[in-house]
Each structure stands twice: as C-alpha cells, then as structure tokens.
Image 1 (tube, rainbow, N blue to C red):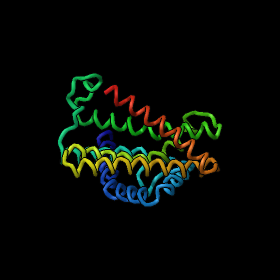
Image 2 (image 1 turned 90 degrees about the horizontal axis):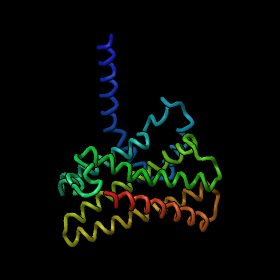
Image 3 (image 1 turned 30 degrees about the vertical axis):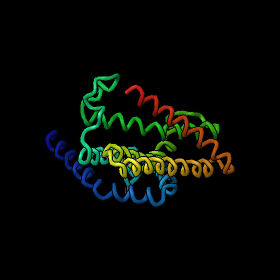
Image 4 (image 1 turned 180 degrees about the vertical axis):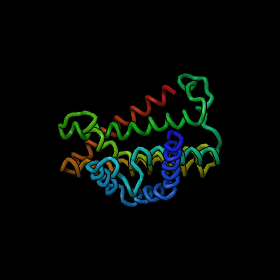
Length: 221
C-alpha cells in the first residue's frame, strides 16, 4: 500500500511540475499586463478553500521562486556563476551552491512583499498577525516577481561589462524600481481610499524601508 501511495504522490508531483510550463508564462503575462488586477485576483483567491485557490495561475510565492530560478538560469548561461557562491567573506561563506543562492535571493525579494504588506496593515490600523498579513503579502509577491526578474537581468547586463550593456542594465534597473514604485502608489491609493499624495507617502515610506532591509541583508553577504 505504501508503494502505491508513493506512486500516486509521484504522479501528482509530476503533473504539478509539468503544469508549471503552462501556468508560469500565463501568470507572468497577466502580471506584466495587468499587475493591479492580479493583486486583486490574489485577494479574492484568499477567500476560497485552500484546494481551490490559484487554479488557473501559480500561487504568488511559488511564482516568485520560479522567477528567481529562471533569472538564475539566464545568469548562468550568459555570465556564469555569481560572485557570492564560494566566497569566504562574511556570511557569503554560507552560500556554497546554486540552491543556497536562490534561497538567499528569495528571502531578499520577499522582503518587499513583507514590508509593503505590513505597511498597509499599519495604515489601515489592522492587527498584524499571520492571517491579516497573508493576503497583502501574497498579492505583493505577484508584482515582486517581475521586479526580481528585471533586477536580475539588469545585473547580468552590467556584468557583461560592455558600455551599451552597462547603460542598458542601469536603465532597466531604474525602470524596474519606477514600475514597482508606481504600482505601490496605485495599490495604497486603492486600498486606503487615500489621495494621490497620501498614497505616495505610504508607498515611499514602505519602499525606503524595503530598500534599507535589502541593503542591510546585502551588506551582511
């Protein structure tokens, strides 16, 4: 019986992994074209039963993780291994292979959804707990994934070390931050029913807090 249960589990795992080939590009396209609608969609999915959530897309945290894996694959194919892998300086000594590097990057880019979700709850004067944080965190993971992808591509361009690629990489990184920041203003304005100036204030504060957290983590490594 245990053997047949194992076969069934493997069958379900194979189907799940292969389905990503369809649902990853679908999720990426929808997030790039209609990012705010995808965030609203995530909020609605939180009200469904767990086995009924995100049936036609990838769950946001998984989407973020796969995006980072994709970006790392592009990095390996174009410029090779990242400097952090194998380094013995500081906490970089803990990064010994691709898996640990991807986990670090996942933690890094998850700081944006975490800080932004917490800022929304504080602005709405809601209690901060596991249940209230989950919804906005999941919604933010959708738009954090393109930010991670564009940031990764910009780093690859800069590491190519051509004049054009360095300029293009810096431009892409600036565009990624502006794109992400603009979405945050619209998101805060929608959820707080605030003025454009008020939403800008909340978004700016959350973005600064996120960048400080990311910079601190990067400094450790």
